[in-house]
Length: 239
Ligand SMILES: Nc1ncnc2c1ncn2[C@@H]1O[C@H](COP(=O)(O)OP(=O)(O)OP(=O)(O)O)[C@@H](O)[C@H]1O
Ligand SMILES: [Mg+2]
Image 1: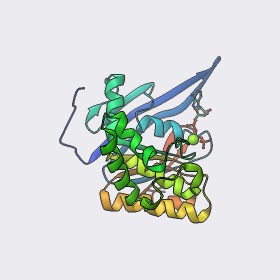
Image 2: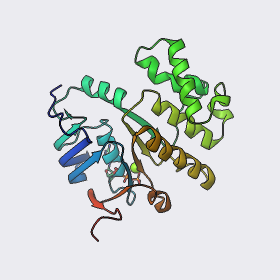
Image 3: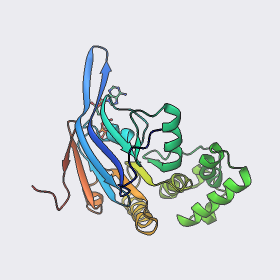
C-alpha cells in the first residue's frame, strides 16, 4: 500500500470531499455529501444527528468497512482509496476496534473466549490469545467474570466485554455506534466512563455515535450529521 506521508503523525484520519451514494431500485440516496473531516490521534469525537442523517455511514467509512463513492481518505498515512480489500482488512484488524449497540458477542463462548477471538483470527495461539484477553478483561474490571457466557452477564457487563474485545488488538481507534443504546442510565454512564478513561490513559482515539446529548457533551468534539453533511457543534466552533 502506498504511504502518502509520515510527517503528519498527529492526524489519524483525513477525509477530503468524501461522498457516499446508495441505490435502492431506481432511487439514489446521497448518504454523505462532500465531507471534509480530520481526526487527530488521541482525540474524542461524538457524532450526533437525526435518524437516517448518515452517522453510521460515516462510521463505516471511518472504520474502513465501506469505501466511499468519491473523495480521498488517508488512514494512518495510508491511501485508502487505492488500497486493496486485503490491505484494508489488515489495517482494520490492526488499527480499529468496533463496539456496537447490540454487543455482537458470540452466545456460546465465555467472556474470555469472546475477547480472545480477534487474536485467534490474527493467528495468535489459543493460550496466548486467552492470556491477552484476560488482561483486557482486567482493564475493563471484569476479570472475575471471565468464564461467564454473555447470557449470564448484565447489559453493562456485556458491553464491557465487547469493549475488551475491541481493545485486545491494541488499536489506535475505537469506533462505537450507539454503544449505550441498549443500556439503562447507570450502565450507560459506567460504559461511557470506561471509554473516556481508556482514551485518557492509553491515548486510544474514540469516535462514538450517540443520540444522548448529555453523553455527547463529554467529548472534546461534537459533529452533527445533517442530511449527509457535517456541522461542527463543538464548544469552540463558530455558531
Ligand atoms: N446499504 C444501504 N443501502 C441503501 N441505503 C442505505 C444503506 N445504508 C444506509 N442507507 C441510507 O443512507 C442514509 C443514511 O443512513 P445511516 O445508516 O448512515 O443513518 P444513521 O444516521 O446512522 O441513522 P440511525 O440514527 O437511524 O442509525 C439513510 O437514508 C439510509 O436509508
Ligand atoms: Mg445508524
